[in-house]
Length: 402
Image 1: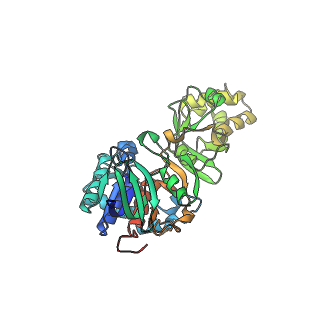
Image 2 (image 1 turned 180 degrees about the horizontal axis):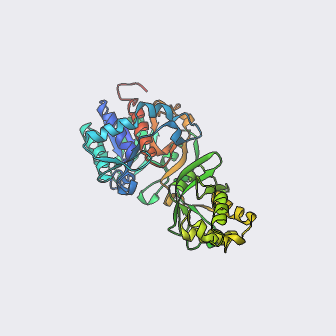
Image 3 (image 1 turned 135 degrees about the vertical axis):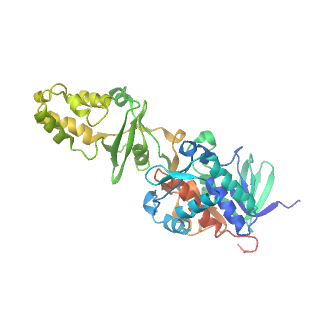
């Protein structure tokens, strides 16, 4: 029988983590092949950041990541930092800008990041093979066998960089979890994260007509708290503050929203009543939030008409609906619109320094497939770069016994 095509390293997944790992491994003298079922590489990069790719965040620290094993990300993030990736971007003459809160975007398009990664792969001799269906992955004693629609491949090190379940329309699958389970690794239940909330029928009816209204807000769920923009939608709530808190939320949990952070609304309403007793409550509240929202909040709290005619108790009820709006979302929009997948491969089964499976030498997992989820704002891409670098620095080759 003809021996299968052999490489030091086969990487499953031509997304950000996979391509970055391929270039770094190739630079270290490994023969590398990247496989993906997609027609084009880096699809998640292409659609990210409104087409400009929020490729990292200036303020990246381990505190910006969620995991059941929160210390796992520390080593990789320290070994390859946001400043290292910025230097790479600048070396490729890609202009960038800071949008807000340390979020960095290309001045041009996301394609610049994809082209940079492909250029680095080519320079390092790492091959990228697309439209390749993987049907089986097996351990064979000297490494791994990867069966594809075109034949069998062999490698000493296998890197799984196939991502999570978010945005299935671009080809997302749970393949990484299947491989992990096949080799006896645990998987933390995946869930949609950085995703809008949805309302039930009664909630939607109560807020009908507010779609498109946006406010700065503080949103709290348990011990998690985020202060950013909030957007009312036809289905429920979105905006950065909501996307952030969604990663921490579990079905059935209540969230608290302050629609006027930094303002004691009860005190403001009392002062307005004293200064302008004939002013209507809706007008007074519209000084803090958009008029459509002010009108709806007054209607829901049954606080309407002249301030002079409204008791402290009714003003307090209105103020609480602004400063401490409590609600339990019906759910989320799911993986269809989720920017990332929370949960994933249990990091207790991996080395935090190399991303290698503790019980399966030569098998590595990187990127979104792991139970490491960044906040909104470029942190998940930084995890892709950092985890890929950690693996690339340790990949086994044919010269290293397994």
